[in-house]
Length: 191
Image (cartoon, rainbow, N blue to C red; front, side, top):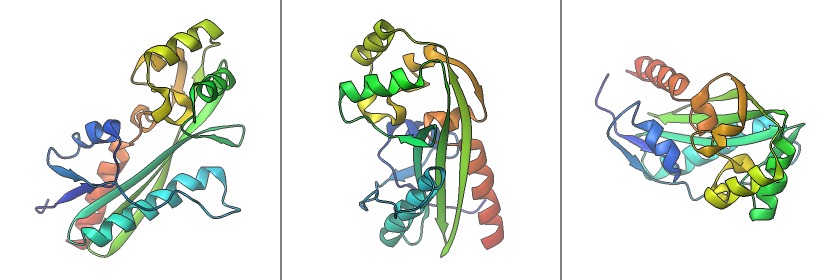
């Protein structure tokens, strides 16, 4: 692989941890664009749309780098459960997820040498039924406010998970295996 300057267009500490699987050396430069998808876009298309916007925004500042944008949402019955606005909202989301299957959707965009490649990765997650007491304990011991769907599978939120079908790291926030493959394909294509 050629010498590449990687830039992660995200302030997520979980994404930064996962990026280390791909390369030990990268810059973190969060995008400064808004997260407002156009009306009429399907919920499972929104993360890829936002990932492209983020990557293109940062690519303007780092045109000679390989820029990675990402956005992750939790979808339950066609409704996006984003980051909760407060602890009551976090409780509502976790109560809704209890005993049910939801989908974690990440959109990823790679910008390199004037080319843009984007994709969507989906993982189905089933929760055990969760008591109100367990939800309150989780909310008080974790920080649900910075997590889509109000939980982190990599922390005590993993205790709620009965089963996943798909990429575990996608649920954490960055589908690193697919991202690594797509980066290699793009770099080989562009030389």
